[in-house]
Each structure stands twice: as structure tokens, then as C-alpha cells.
Amino acid sequence: MRVSNRLLLAASVATVAASLGASLPAFASGFALREMTADQTAHAFAGGVSEADDPSTAYSNPAGMAHVDGVQMQFDVNGIFPSATFSGGNSLGGVTTSGSTGNVVQSAATGGLAIVAPVTERVNFGLAIATPYGQRVSNPADFVGKYQSLVSSITDVSVSLAASLKVTDKLSVGGGPVIDVFEARLTQDIATGYGDAFGDMHGTDTGIGFNLGAMYQFDDKTRVGLDYRSQITHSITGWQSITPSAAIYAIPTLGSYIAGQIASGSSSASTRVTLPDSFNIGITRDITPKLTLMAEAQWTDWSLLKTIVVNTGSATTSSSLNENWRDTYYVGVGADYKLTEKLTLKGGLGYDQSPVTFSNRTSRIPDGDRFIVGLGAGYAFTPAIRAEFGYAHLFVGSEGINNSSGPTVGTLVGKYNDTADSFGLSLTLKL
Image (cartoon, rainbow, N blue to C red):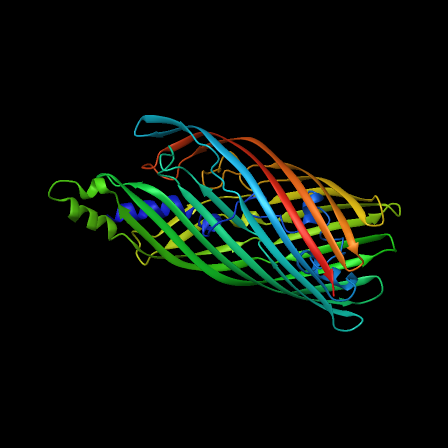
């Protein structure tokens, strides 16, 4: 039953980089998450690299910590409510089976924590815990593409340790190591020739990268921020299990033997996955004492996801597949309007490009370009306590798919209709 084992890997490994994990929906480009703070959500995810007005800058641009006054702590909670529905068919062995699904992307909550504290007048230290990647796609058991995918899930948590230095009154720099924990799970059905089996593959790893930033304060109204996040390579080790269906066990005389041969394809598995590096640039300017505008652009190196290789210790079960993702760009603008001394209204518009196109879209990553509209507000209860709320709607629309990961899994042809709503709450305390 080596063929069954290899087919599980071939169908699953293409998205190991995008799918080794647990329970978050991905609704930024690829399997990235932009939902970090309520302020950024309200600005359609613009402004984080240049605002530097709360502790979350320890993650988005550590150089901005030089502009954070005193010891501050920030708590973030995000609710992500995506929707992706499929309609179409799967062609296998000359037979096309039509079908549709309800929403296959699950809602979830994410959280974050950031702390910034001064060491000297010119040096600040910071800590940020965030969830920069995540996904949870769960197709129904009778999905027409069940031989391509059922469950695809990712959990990723990063811990950033950072320091900033105020080089001059105008220029600050910052950076530090990033510890990243990446976990994933893939499942699908496998056609064995005797009946279906269930394939389940999961793995985890901890990797290390870094974050570097710079910020320049042109005057008391204008500052520009730059930030670079490095690639992080994960050497993922895990296990793939193959479970024969009851129908295989029920085969007269030989059922138990055949099932045992199929199950013997279960084994350890390993692969290397590199999370992309990215470069952000942004500007924040106070237009009037009440109105502040910001703009941001980001490049992400998704094109490094070319080929995924999974090793099982045997040439007959090791697999490689071409993904051929493309680099992506995000652009966004945001605005704050100080309605009163305590209440600030927020808004933003953004565009986030997807690394996948019609030529390489899969049922594990039914992704597409999206337009973003954000709204929100901030309220200062006291000079030391501030709360913010953000909402963003992501318009994705209809995205076509024509995908097959092997001759025995069929060709999935149809379309996905995607959309998402994100809500964020943040509380900042000055200690």
C-alpha cells in the first residue's frame, strides 16, 4: 500500500507550508493574519509601521518604542469571521460529481500582548506576543474534493523581544529576535482501490528569526517608519496516519489483511517550510490638531514557496510538489479624527494581494485578492487608560479553481465565494 501513502503526501504536502497547524482562519494574503490590534483593524491594517503611539509598535516596528512614553502594556483580542463557500464539481475517472458547501472556513478569536519599558532616556525594551499566521479550513465529509482535502489548519504564535535606540532626536532604530512556534494538521480521504481510507498528517516546530526597524521624525507632525521581518525556516517533524474505512475491513476473507497493509503506510514525516520575509514602509502625518492621516505599503516574499518536499525515509513515499506562489503587495491608508479630547474616530481603506492565482489555487487555500474597509474608535478613560475598537470588512468575491494534485484524486473545478469580517478590541495601560 505504498502508493496510498505516497498519494496522501502528494495531495497534502503541497499545503504543508500553508497548513501544518490547529485553529485559526486565514484572511490576509496566503495564510497570514493582519488582525493584530483594534487600531490597525480600524485603519484597514494601515499605520502600524509609523504610528508608534502604543506598545504594539514592539511588533510592527520596534524603532517606534522610542516614542512610547514610560511603561505601557497593551492587551488585544480579535474576532475573525470569514466565509468561503464552494460550488462546482470534481472529475475523477471520467465521472464528474457536482456539489457545493456551506462556509468551510471557521470563525475564531486571536489575542496579543505587548509591553514597552524604558531602560534609559534613549533605550527602550519591549515584548510582543502575536499570531501572524493561521488557518482553519474544514470541508464536510461528503465534499466532492474530499480526496484533495478535508481539514487544513494552522496555528502560529510568535514572541518578539526588542530594543530601541534613540540615535538622535529625529532618528530611532530598533530590533530583536523573533521566536516562532508553527503547528499544523492536514486530513483527507484516500482512494485505495478497495475503498476509502482516512489520512491525517500533523507536525510542529519552533524557529527563530529577527525584526529590524527604523523611524525618522521629520518634525512634530510627520514621521516615517521602515520595518523588515526576516524569513523563519521551520524543520517540521510529525506523523501521518492512514486509517482504513469499515468497508475495507468488511471485505470477505481478506479485509483485515488488506486493512493492515493500508494502515502500515502510517509513518513519521518531515519537511522544511520557510515563512516569508517582508518589508514595510509607512508615513503618519498630523494634518491638523484633530486630523491625522497615515499610509502604508508592504512587500511579502511569498515567491519563496516554490516546491515543498516531504521525506518519510523512503524514496517511494517521499514527495515533492510545485506551489509557485508569487510575491504580494499590500497598500492601505487610514485616518484618525479627534472628535473630543477623549473620543477619536478611525477609518481606513486597503488592498491586499494574494500569492495564489487561478493557476495554483487549491481547496486548502481558497484565497484571493481582497479590498478592505475599516472603521473604529478610541476612547481615553483617563490619561493612563485607553480602549479602542476596530472593525474591518474584507471584500474577496468569486475566485475560480481548476486544481488536481494527482491522477487518483480528480480535478476540482468551480468557484469559491469569499468574504470576511474582523473585530478588534484593545486596552492600553500606562503604568
